[in-house]
Length: 522
Image 1 (cartoon, helix red, strand yellow):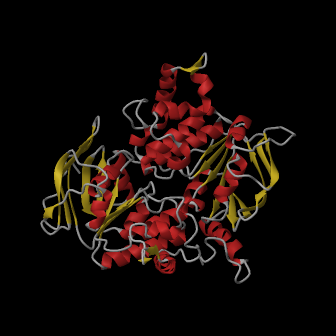
Image 2 (image 1 turned 135 degrees about the horizontal axis):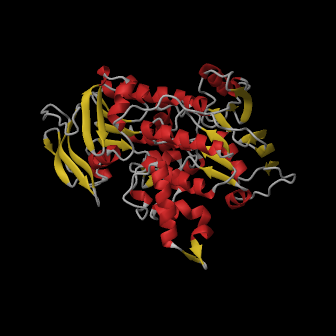
Image 3 (image 1 turned 180 degrees about the vertical axis):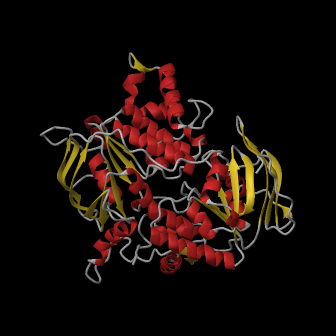
């Protein structure tokens, strides 16, 4: 469809966008006209930086449009804040979660409407309400008084979704809602979407996972470079059609894993463990090798990487880097980096970036001596390094001086990766490396990861997307209930076998002993 596509005015829409534009330093949205209907699921997709999140934030009061207008039920709608939009029944679950880590799950769910008696919080009622709301999204095995900061990103995502289903919801926007969810949690989310749709709620579902869009959506809207390029019934489009609309070209279907030589071990982990999180685990990672780590949320995947990287303190075990016969002393991430281990975390906002700082600083942060002269940062050298990685990784930004907070989620993730590419460690740990990255850029990331392996790096990758691991990896370790339960070689795995292994640790638990977060996933 033409790049200047416009939707015709629709007087029967719940919400209508007319000529919406947004300009920061540059124009990022151009004349978006779009109706949203009650009881309809609209799939919104496009590359990172295409304008999806900006449109959503304007609808939800987080950003003000630079041009155009909106109507809600035929009346002017111009929310001044997120709270204002929510008061009018417009909700949004952002990629970057809006939770307070130092408060409990129950308090986060009902923060603006805490039940009280005689001026005191009614804790019994709060717990009862929280358990009921958590049950709607399958979180029956989490104590509502658990601090949100103690939970993984996947569980936090489900809590954010549960929070937005409280009260009167007329329009719900879900921004990459399944990026960190297991298959079971995705199915629970889809049940909620079907229920809301039947109740007349309008939904906007933002995702790069085209197979999900086909399951839940009635209509497809594609943005490219801030312009509306498709608004049509979804049924008439194949995945290949949508990819071409998103990126302006067909996506590569094959990944060349050749040109690598598997060499000596670059990482040996011996009986590394932490009580309550990871049972004693041993693994070896070779030069040029890509090892995947699969499992359900709460299975210990992320926790194992954090132990190797020194982000959590191990109760036992040793880590050897390269050919060293003496274990590395890793008491912190700083020690791990000095030993030659890098890690891209699953939480780029909370753990990976200095959001208000430039792309240049974030790119060189782990290697500041290389861009310093006589103890002072060399801004010109920083810019040269960052600009090179912006080109190499396809980071869409004004220039290397732009604060990373102004970038889309996928481009922020690429900045985190650029930092470790520049540091050039022999061991690289990736936790959900393509979270929030669009389908066009995702393949570019895969090629970059394979390129690292060709250079002799050893890569360990945690991902919730089994197809991603099956495409990239030489071996896949499956964790279940805190243990590595099975290891698959490339010629031996199937998606069903990987899933069965992921559930096996919970099946083996004695009755009444299923305290692991997703033990009820069966």
